Image 1 (cartoon, rainbow, N blue to C red):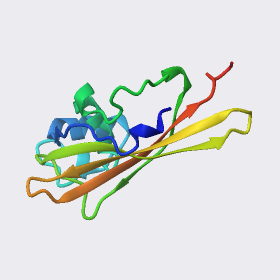
Image 2 (cartoon, one colour; image 1 turned 180 degrees about the vertical axis):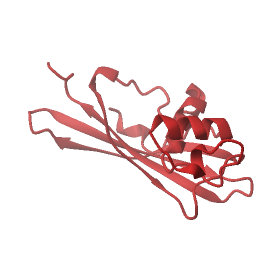
Image 3 (tube, rainbow, N blue to C red; image 1 turned 90 degrees about the vertical axis):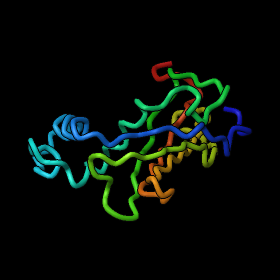
Length: 148
């Protein structure tokens, strides 16, 4: 992978923490927490991993990858974490998100061949511009496709 994409940013995109989607997400992850799934009352918070669904709000212009080619046969999801300076956003909150490539590094794989690690950070800001959440994920590109 081309290390020159380190620092690339995608264009900001809108994320609406919508009540029905919070409920659907909570049910999909088998949560029975009434703060997420109770009918007829707005959710005061969203599940901590709810913002993972924001990838469905991103278009190609919002991606920090630019023209960097990704071989999806060789991509692994390494890890992902969410950091909140306060509570996760409540239903009805509108956020502006922006993804960037934070760091790229290589390690030798245990089965031979180099692995390229890409740390991607997405910041979520509220209407005042304050960061209300941050997602940090690691994507790993292996030197060969699994099973090769």
